[in-house]
Image (cartoon, rainbow, N blue to C red; front, side):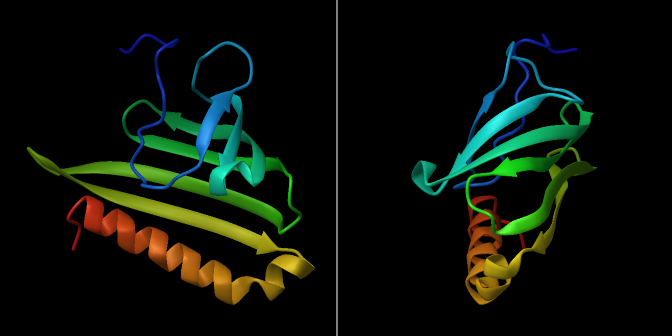
Length: 125
């Protein structure tokens, strides 16, 4: 098992927000962290609610510096499919607020770009 002070979520997604753990450097259920997106323009406070070392990482947003969402959560699941391959299942769940609803077309474009870039980076078909 990995040293709990050295564990970090796998950086599986390009352009994903940078993060900083609040408190001692550890990752696991109930860890809170601060993540910055878009070059620090948006700041999220997040809580990890699902953690399986090397397999799963799930979190929800506690607070955001921009009130775009009522609720926001992500889940990353890595499942082996062979000796040198795996399946990434990436789930994003959101409930936008008023301003966030107005931005839905831009959000869809941003997410589709993020998913496309991830597929290209890892040669996923």
